[in-house]
Length: 583
Ligand code: PEP
Ligand code: MG
Image (cartoon, rainbow, N blue to C red; front, side, top):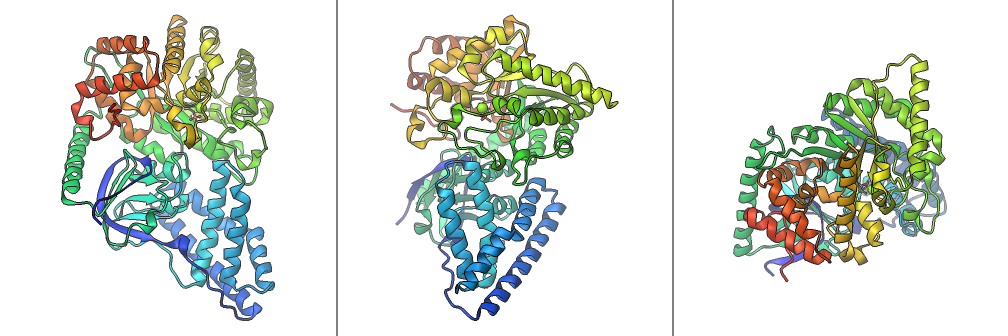
């Protein structure tokens, strides 16, 4: 049948058309055949050795490509390959009478059952790493190479792709990918965005619907997959791809230009960084600094906390890259949906629990070592510190005391610290927004985190698909809190930025400008598009748009109004970027 359309989650933007390459690893059935225990053990050990050689080869390739993040993931796998828990469990299954391949399958299945009961996406990602490495060994035994095909460019379809699979994807051959599982928050999606590979994830059952070699289209803006498109659909998408390329070319020209409205109001456009792999794209896309450097990835370790030196190396790399432009390091925001392995603690309401600044002030050695590492990096650029999840003034005061302690300690050690070191807060909890006039007297800047501000204002779990229709960062309640925060900042002589996903949402840009925001921090790849909107509208028009929005009573009405306002000025965006509510 022609033109079969499937919907999933848009994980990485872009539209591509090509031949499908279906990776059927998940439905791979391990053989039950069995030789003697000694022979099966020998097979297992030799498969481990051979996998080790493969991984070392990949490490070599990634080193040549200077892909630090991919490298880290594969190095973790190399360690897992020797992990006694993996090796001994499989040995025991073999001794109990299983064949080597089936013993590994059994190891994965047992692990899966245990991990399924854990809702935390970060812990699930650790499971994916273990599963990935175990599968590699299993495929060796079954004589499959299991590697991705690199003969001709294709659109990859897989049940799931592990972060390490994704980090290895070669952009020349993989035009885009579709997976049956996964969410926008997964590492796989993050890496796809960092590499600029269009992707749609969470398309349940798609592997049964698409055959190798079939023509497919994937639309990473809207999360749409079309299998065997008919001529009409092909033409429509070809036109959209062409238009998008032209649009990108135009944006490319504006790369060196400032993000200034028609009537001269300049907005600082900076980048959100989740992994170091995004630093280079941030520079290439014209970011005027880093508005939010999420530091959680450094703490994604199995073996305790990262030391000060390891942290310092990451912070220095970013500071050096941006020199005089600001690089804002957010202190660890573990907890909620980002619980790290070493922190695991069962809480009934983790989003309302031991998260962000609450955790790091409680475990002050974590805060101190992180702040010391950031301060050390201060001599290499223009660094600032930002505190996440602040809900009370006492937290700011305590953090300031610890910052002073860290500065004094380093100066006693003979280090030169570039002072003053600015410290700001994320405004992402309603209490901080409501009391922003007081907070503004104690900090150097505000950055509004609309992901959490929306979640906590509307009482809508940001990760729960079932109620996602209620989650909208342009909800009037959130807009009012943003206005209050920005006004409080300006009345007290400090600046206010926005670093939540709203800063990447084209329809919201005129509203944010009209609310008088000073800085927008967003995914590097989207900076040119957002700049295009800023340069095509006047501040005066934006103020009027914001005034209208502030009179509205529902998110639905606000979104509809903002979509109309945007499209009346930028009609070419209709098919490219914006999901318009037509009712
Ligand atoms: C936010 O909450 O808007 C934010 C930027 O922080 P994070 O998404 O990391 O919680
Ligand atoms: Mg947040």
